[in-house]
Length: 74
Image 1 (cartoon, rainbow, N blue to C red):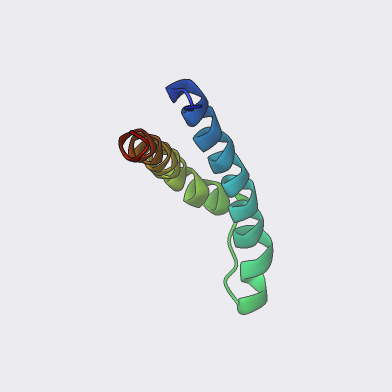
Image 2: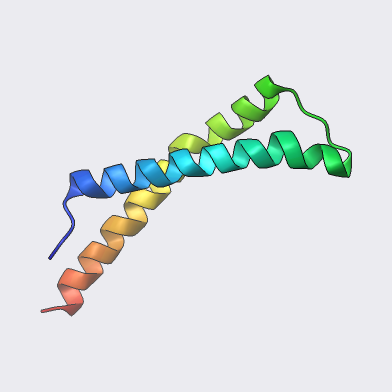
C-alpha cells in the first residue's frame, strides 16, 4: 500500500515539530553547559529557520522512497 501525499506531508510535519521541540531543548538547556548562553528568542528563531527546510526535506525523501517502491515493485 502506498502512502498518500497528504499523509507524507503530515508525517514530515510531525517529525519536524518534534525536531523543533527537541532542538529547542538542546539549544536552550544543553548549550549553556558548554558556555554558549542563548535567550529564548534566539533558541526559537534558530529552530524556526530550520522548520521549512526540515519539512521539505522529509517530504521529498518520503515521496522519493514511495516513487522508488513503485518503480522497483513493478
